[in-house]
Image (tube, rainbow, N blue to C red):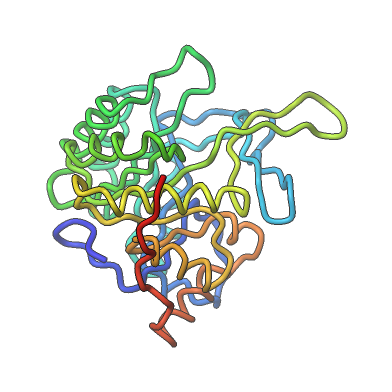
Length: 289
């Protein structure tokens, strides 16, 4: 899979939301790429620490009040640990508006331009009505801002919300803004009611997200207006799940929840790909709706 003019993934299996401390000896050097946890310009404290809650056997809620690391901490502390596997590292970033995306991209270009292969522009809907509105124009302008700061050679992957009815239009905005690839999709807005305490807001990932994410990948891969490669992400735990995404049109996949639940899973799936290189990739036929 080609991500920009100077980056070709050696393997379609990638790690997303990468833990800062990966276990040794599990084969992460086989991965196509490592995508970091999403960071913001200035760190934000959270009342729930990492804020990841298991809400079902293979589904997680990433709470909105979790701690979020800043870009400076990433560059100084975490990035060297992830780069030791000698695979491309892309930094996942988000911001409350276009100036914020421009600022963090400028910082990364200046402080880590030679250490990272690019960035993932994490587009999410606002938790409250005070946040930005996610529109094709917003996606285009956010992508343009990042592309301008990073330059033409960097990979810019735009990760879109799990909205099958609207994701094509958002993807066109990303393509017009200079994206290298699309990722479908990020977490689904959800709510969890614990046995004790207040309801928790957050983003749902894992098994529960996979059917929605597959549909999003299919929509993007079958849109004649879109020419960008698609990375599928959401609920990948087995080689068959990887195959399902590739059959729907994905060129690569990201594993996040599966790695959180089973450290080393992503490396194992990458190894299986290397050994067989024969996951079923026949395109899924066209269907209605």
